[in-house]
Length: 79
Image 1 (cartoon, rainbow, N blue to C red):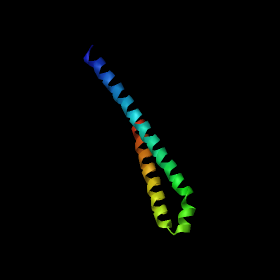
Image 2: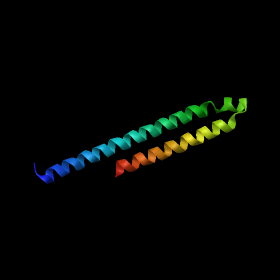
Image 3: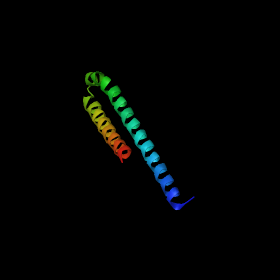
Image 4: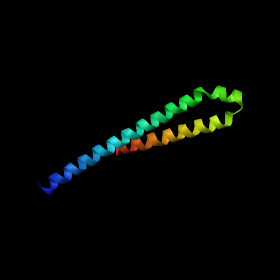
């Protein structure tokens, strides 16, 4: 094998790893958004119990974390 062939194989392997990592991060971000929807579903019960602030903080944090993780995943896939 020549050095050029080995370099191209390493580059393609690195690209595949980056795409897989990006897809994994996108899936994790989507799971965070599903968790966020689950928390949002129980928000009316939290309002009745007087714990609206905690549910709002949890919902906002999960949404932002999901958005950031998905953006990083998309960036890695495009790169």
